[in-house]
Image (cartoon, rainbow, N blue to C red; front, side, top):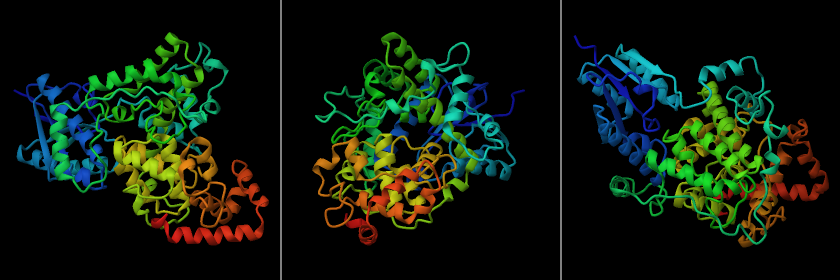
Length: 511
């Protein structure tokens, strides 16, 4: 007698042949189920390149499954939501057992669990072994803590997984964190020659998806002309190998640097492959450590990269599931302004925003400083409703999946949760952008001018924000020096800053 059929649901960001959902798969009775849901591309106004990346990667993965003999139902361009398509499949075939890996998105997890109750399913939702830290391990670490800081979690991960530590559990190089060594701008003459990341010409599957998305999502933001992202495991591995061989060397020193028409700098461009599960973080870290030893790379570069993968990436996932759904609703400063329309088309006179958003629309990518200290910084200073900003980030970046996007945007860039896992708001004036880039050289606004027609809007809003929230900033030793600088500005000038800021805030679309 055959065992009962199980349906194995694989989501678009679970493209791993070693997925826990496929463990103990019975090729005689079980079946894989994948859905391209139009709803998933539309609940935020997704970048065309993001839609292509997900659909192409899913189709390539489904092809791999078929080649390996997996029975699979793959729904292309379904008008149904994932849950409705799943419900229809289960009911039509009277399947009572559902296997899946825990989703990376709180919304989908709740919906699957609700469906299981509704249909009286035997639900086997398995732990996502892709990550170093399980959700339960993070919950245990967080228990009883009033403040959550990356540094302490990161040290625990280093020790637990024996990464960059000696036999006694002490950090390589005598310190845990080399962040101060990873913040240099490019030289004044510019970054010089940078080896481009390895990119991939669209194959037949990707070309088919591009043609479909160009028509079906023609009104969505972004361009597909430059689509060259890895869409399968072989390509993702090639991208990883190329990074560690040719680009890792200069990553650490210049990871915060920005320059016009330099969209990738020395960054790895591996986040989309990691978040789709085409790459495993263990093999990424292993490759970086191997390169460190092989080429005697600077430890600060290696540690800085590993901190992003083993530290921050794992940390924000833990915080996401710890704080949802409240995280999506937090609005510490009670900001309510509408996101400026030029976030969607890049048509602004501010050179920094124009460049960062322009490359985002072209490639679906910007690195972490462009996201945090340019587009995120401005949105916070401009008092934009956090949920609107978060929706934009989720829509516009090819690597954005809510578990990683929301904590970064709401928690870090916007301080929407009041500093639950960050010690201060990440705000800066135009002076920071000038120091870390050449954007200001071609801008009509002047970063050193605080108010008036030529004043940099970032600078004006920065000082206005400090004036408005002076009490909060003075209460913390991490931010007290920022408000101390207000003492150097006369009362009359502070009044002019506030007046000009009100003009800027009421004319955000015209900047």
